[in-house]
Length: 573
Image: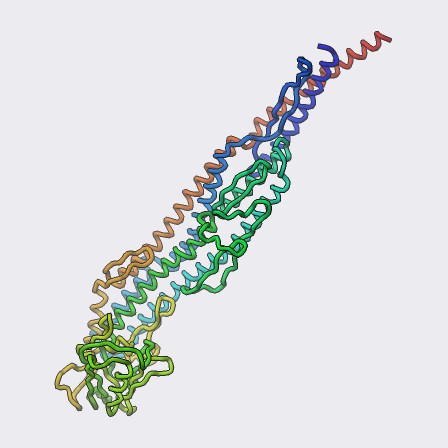
């Protein structure tokens, strides 16, 4: 080998060692950067006219398993999805409490049962009536509060959806920025490889927020899709969504869109997919269970209280069900209405054969045909029946009346003696008139004696059959429709409430477990990736030492060959 060839080889060795030192130093500097992969040199021998002339650096970078990257992206999406459920469900579960806790809905129902049992024993006790209505009011308040908790968490989820959409848009623009820098590059330089790592990390972060698919084309540009919608390509297509603010069970949410087109059906994973499911399915399922309890409680208790009449009877009864004079009416059997004095004795008795009634107008006309009773439809659309003399009261005795497809009693059909009003857990409440005047709570039923005449007793202070029926109701297995995670069943009111508490607690526990499992799976893949492609500082330190030795050796060769060249030149002179 000539001296010149030796110099050329030594110089290339010096340059490659210098490049290697730079790469190792860069690796050590970025060892703690998430997503950074260890870089290495690719070298090739230089050959000129069949003779080796040193070594050439062909590329700088890292080669990673694309399938492992895809697996990490998928695991990130699953982890992001599972992570959103635990905290909201734990918050809900905390508010719902445990079975047996003071103040839990199942305990409050048991407390009402106890109060009604005492009322059945002392039916003329105003204190017992007051306690009963107070316990009923506590149930209504708790159902209102639980419903508000559920809807508040839905509102939080909705706001998080808006925030997550903003984060997604930020990452889409970050990925696009990396695409712009990498477009047309071949990934063979240190800076290019580092940009690719940063882009991959941004894709993983994006995957945690929403389930995506992606691929990198021949120009080193990564295209990103949400479902079938391209969101990163030649430019960014941002997502659009605005949270609604206050949320109720009836709130309708707008869609997440791209360029005005809904992509809701394409969102299936990541924290965004989890938040949508939490807001639109999981929490509404719990609300359905609460509503099922509330409506079944209302319907069951109201059906009984509407069979009774207060003592003394109130001068006016106002229904809770909206109706109209022109509404069709279908019933059978007979209902008895009586105007009573302060002692519960009949002043007037009228009986209506419901089989002859075809409209609400017919009912109003039949009642208005009496001497002491007046009927009308109020401004709020409810039926009102009042005594024409303030000293008299209105008593309704159902007899064998059956109204509508559900075979309701006459008073129940119009809600004339409802203990509870409302349509669901969010607005259930106790009859405000009864809370203001506990004597209006009916604890007994009026006389169904066929020979009842003016002057006879319609209701007495000692009547307690309605209170007894209410007490028995709490021991009965009542039919509940399927709602939320709970299937249709027949059970007691308190046991169904306990099932709701158990279900919410189970959902919260499962959410924690699933989040932990998904997070662990993601962490294991990231650790595996890091172990395989991350920076090992000990190895890099050893590499630096070896490169330093190689650099010194190449420098020594250059020094020796230079000395030889100087000697030869001196000899020539």
